[in-house]
Length: 621
Image 1: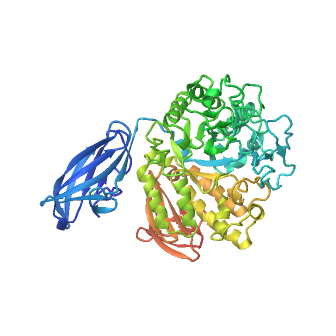
Image 2: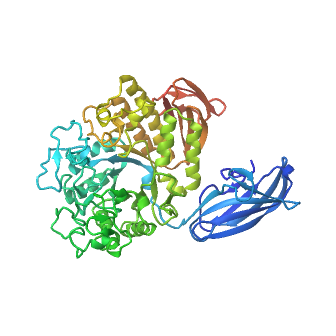
Image 3: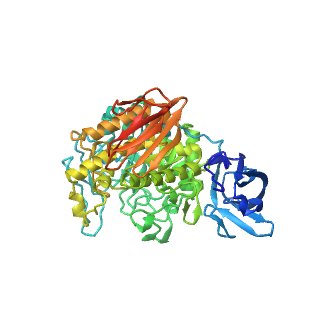
């Protein structure tokens, strides 16, 4: 090992750093290489600069030649790429990158994130538990009458009916069937959410729209009448806050619906829309190739005309205006926004939202939907700046979901550790601890189905997937792995996020089958009990909310790590295999108790020996 940036022997401080931080490096090539000089080569992504800094020879140790030095991180946030150039007495040059010693131009650089540490990042989100609700499907108090509402809506009379899933006569799936879940319905279940330990309630879009998912916004300033009224939202936010629960709204600002107040292709609104007249106040929001029929839309879906987020009128309406969309709903009681398809939004647009949110409500939280490592993401040929201090506070942690599911379905625990160490190394600490960690979302098949049916292929037809229910054997396996995965979810840094119904055993393949109605009265008690207990622990143990991360074991089917904060330690150990596993781990206390079962373990010489059941785990306190 010549250089390992995750080891303080080679680099301090660890991971991402704030601007103007001094970074110390030590390289340790074999003395037999006979290198006489070493130079650090830095490329600054956004500044477009290149720097070379000589490292000084620092003697030898254990057959290794030492080269040491330091550099100061730039005064502006940036993304740095590091590699090293060694020289020999004969003038030969050798480069060092993540791929080892190599020739010039072949080195794979190390990433160094430099962020603005002076900006405030609220820490309440990452400390607590998030619960995601698809509003139409969570709880209804009565069957609504869709008469007079936007679009051609159909309401299911029975809560447990199968959703519409086949294309219509025109070959399109329009998502016009509703079940009538409402804001008052959510309010009626706040005691249940509090029992789950929920501290953030993330609502998929609630604004007026003609679809049940409401990602094709009709009116940003109006709550969809099937969900309720603005007063209902205000009351929900107030009642939630009384229970220590923040409300996060979904902001869909890259596109609107074609059947919206702003585009109004079908004349549903009395206002003049961009598709009706070039004199419309909203005409400049859209990019028409041939007015009114050809225009830029999200991924070519014509019912989702894309907006021009750089136009001053749109910026004023959504962000800057006195009663902008961002300001208005924060004043109604929301504490956070989640930005849908953040990759599609310009950096400056996101930065403006962050500035206005901080101005309007200093402790509000901005989350971005990004599916990859957000520290180095390239979208539309541009490197993004989500986490450098002026845009999002945190991101949806899809890398966690992908690597956790891979591990739970039989992958090597070492791969999960490596994936998470990459994120921890690349993200500013506040962003790592404020990541939205999840196993399931509205965009993916239900986690129980993914765990229970693996590796069997899903039915090939939509009808087959619509009606599929797991066998008892599949359900048992999925349930066990989900409960093991819940330990990982709640013990790991970042906000553990539960997609409504995952905590009671809901199953289903892709959209819309992952968006069924909550099975009130038919919950799986074993799964639900596990989630309730984990929620209680997350909210009462500072080590799970803020503690550092220490890995103890990550091989094969077994994973163990601990969190420590001000003398309190919580240790998670998980076995996703089919056999018992014996594991000996460090333990400082006089007695270790599994907080999930109450079982106690007596340490010996600073270690505790566990026998982990198949597809299960422990949470030692």
